[in-house]
Length: 297
Image (cartoon, rainbow, N blue to C red; front, side):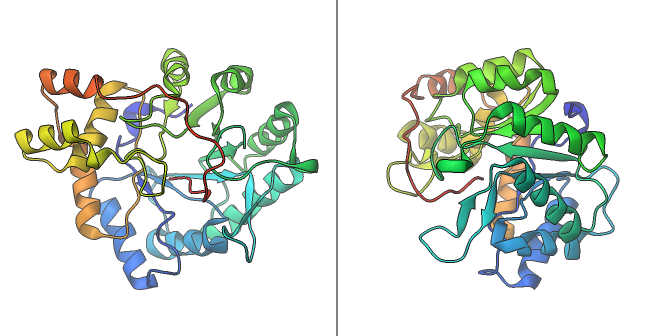
């Protein structure tokens, strides 16, 4: 399990540090994140075909002992198409993803790896031989953990019944789409809280993609931000942290200024009346399926 007391609650999602950003700028953001106290970085070997991992290695190796690097498997880089990804759900593909992480990051062991299932949208769908049973996938993840190649197992994009089925494997983390405006996974969060499993929401502020709610655009969020002297994004992140003590955040950015604002959100204490008003905003409408692209953090 992740020791929540040792992990800074605001981490960093590295997906945006791909080759659309210069290597020097990506390195500067990563080093600044660690200097600001971030010790939880989320990545994947399929981000920019391994380039994000290689930039993490360049910026931060040799790694601090307290740095928790979390990766994910279940997809692979693919050239062409609207999204440069393909499903990679087979046990051998999960293992290949871990091996790629180890090589690209220069590690002997990945502290935690999330199994990115394709049970919930948005993004890729499993078809044909990519429809793989949970038990077969978890058996491979457990084998990788027993071999010392990964430290802990997480699971991502899964409904509550799949999380419950995965509990015997010793799940340490669940990553699902969740925000102030999209609480369709509230029951999954409640299970994670009861089981002392880290809850790591992706799309924590919604998304600019069509059909996704954008937390910073909400009028109540904007009003609270004005009252406490924060940005709307900081209010959205602070609400997530206040909502459940097992929540860890991994907001991603290419901007040093936004990075500083995101980390500072961890120090914001929302007034009780503001929390009540924000609590009343959220929707429990189901997350829409089939939206593209597959973007995880």
